[in-house]
Image 1 (cartoon, rainbow, N blue to C red):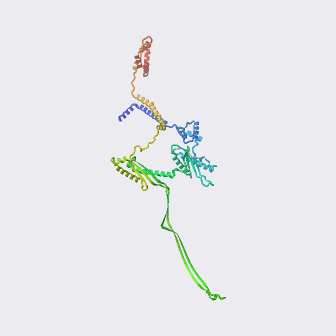
Image 2: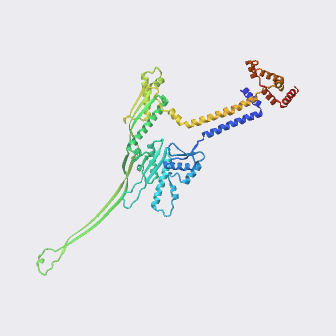
Image 3: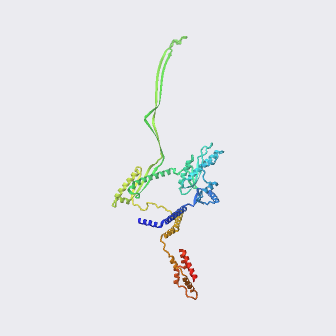
Length: 548
């Protein structure tokens, strides 16, 4: 390797400074041409002016640009306008003067053009709704795959003579491409419901530009059946992951398959419980009643005698029976409050009611682990161990009625992976047609520059670098020129070729004439070598002819 480098360095030194400078200049020129060609070939011919336009705006923009002499093109979807590179700013300024495009959704900038003088409350409310619709439509269009969107909102109105309040509602029309419309519709419903005060998601209707209903009414994802199905799938996936983590390190990821079926109960349960504690009592109220009673009774009586029957005779009263009583009463009532506790429990979770697990193990793997001489009893024992492992990893409960089955079978090769459909050759060519054309043009430019520029220049430099062959000297050229006598002999030989004279030159003479240059060519070459000596020779010939 060092010898080769030394030989290359010695060859470069042999070229000299001028030739090395020329080679460097050629290399810089070729690289510059290739770079400029690559930039211009890969540079798009058109730049995007506007996207997401209506057809009316596309037609008006095309008329305005055509009248201004600016070339334009319309995208394949019919909603975008493209102009040549370098004219984007001019085209946008021209369209802004004409007020185009007009289909852009208006947002809160509507209030910039609304004067406060003479603006009624109704106009303010309408402008607010329009601005809200435009802002929501802009947000929806920012979602990947949504080309255009339009939103209509009906706000709630309060009336004096209306018993029930009107609930707000909304409708959305979208134009999409390359997305799952139903999933996007659900997201759009929640977006609109969160942006409008008092609006519920089930009051939002979503349609596409073809008139197909994407979402309306209750959200199907909130139904009990959908919730139960989602919980079952989640539980089954978690249990399957537990089985894979337990068996992968032992059997390998491709030597077993597990299937789980779980039955869950997602009913909402509410439990209320009241607990009384008789040991902890508190006096709530005390009532005391006290009563004292004293009773004295005295009665006078007249005795029965003869005197009572005599006139003008007053009988003397005598003391009668006497009685007295005293009564004291005291009552005390104490009310006690017994300590109690109320517990209300609301459960929105789930409960696994039954679970079935099936696991199949590759019998070849078990044979490889146990050895070629493994007996069926050994394989069955190992399968029982795997069953215990799966039971422990999944939390299986036989009292609940759970079922597990582990079997060792022979796997079929080639069924692990699913065939992925690949795009056809025509689809790939159509998708990368523009890139292929640019690459082909770039290769052609590089080839032309290298073949017509670099190769001839390198060949010329190489030819100059080789030592030039020594040409004939001036004396040799002079000797090769014909003398006047030789020219006279040549003329006489030419005269002899006329009719009636000797025959013309033979083919050998023609071959000698072709090999030896003509006298005129030799004279021209001698003039190029030395003009002064050639002039002297011609003067000498002319003097000889005059002397003759």
